[in-house]
Length: 151
View 1 (cartoon, rainbow, N blue to C red):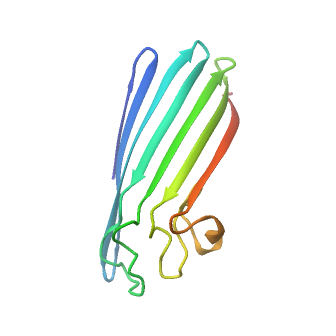
View 2: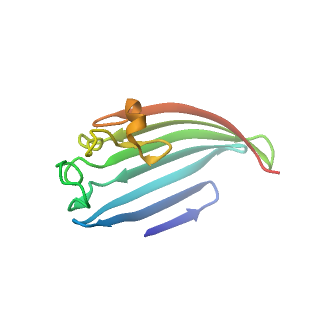
View 3: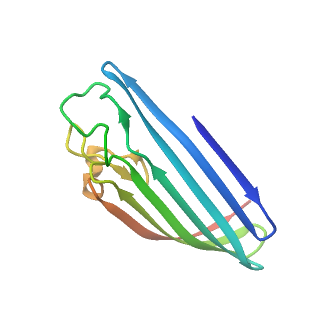
């Protein structure tokens, strides 16, 4: 389930999101709530500042099939994401973009039955194969530069 809304003013916009993910298995059900806010502010005719903040709360419920890990749900199993940036319109169809973003896993986010996991930028919940960049208390951050052209 997901709810989202947006308000646009003359020089700014704000948005909000709430979502709840659930999974059911032979041993029970787990759920996780996520919420977020974002905003833009027009600082010049062709440029605006952008920002976002999202928080995935701790996973709650009972294990859904694996019993060997105490961290399938409970405290410190969430994550935080934030981003700040600038967008510059070259024309009605072409946009330049620069962002800084960070994703911070909580202390037990990356611990699952295989000893790997956690949130990353591309996959939502990462797999064992990407354990180099994910896990408990891991902070991923970086810059993004791009161009968007609408045809």
